[in-house]
Length: 196
Image 1: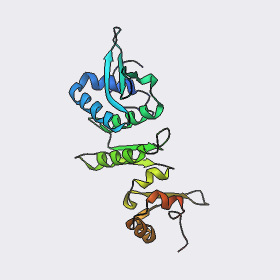
Image 2 (image 1 turned 30 degrees about the vertical axis):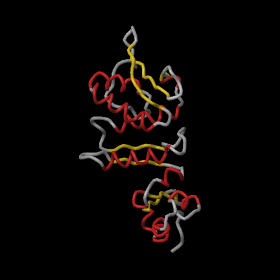
Image 3 (image 1 turned 60 degrees about the vertical axis):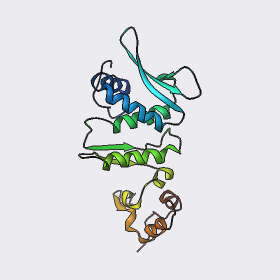
Image 4 (image 1 turned 180 degrees about the horizontal axis):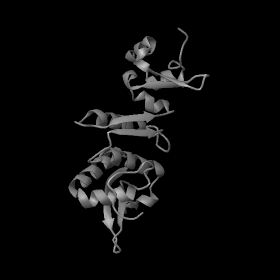
């Protein structure tokens, strides 16, 4: 659909509409957001917008290695996904509870630490911040989390899931305190349920 929209929808496929809304309603804040996002996406020097003669708004990514900018349609899915997450977090009026499923899909694994830090910062860094619930199957993402931030869900043979905080396991807590990454412990089966 054409036209500005205030919030990203659950699929993020209205990214252009949200860009249009932010450009129109929060121009200065939006440019500040673009500048901050550009610093977090490797290789991107600047992100800006350009209006076409027919009134459309194009999102341009200026890569350090190229003189001419790339338009959103030419960017990788991972870059656009990272941009969408950052824009979601900068929503001036965010939903109180945000669920994100498997943010690692399509992202370069070294960006996952940055993304986890952004989620943490936005969930804890301001008054009335949204609660952010993220599911993942990626140890690199879990490496960026603390045991207190990590909950393990396991489906039982009865079909029901149990949930426990990773910090409830004293062995896991001790190993993380000794410098072992939480995702590596998960990969090595330390987050699996153990018989009591």
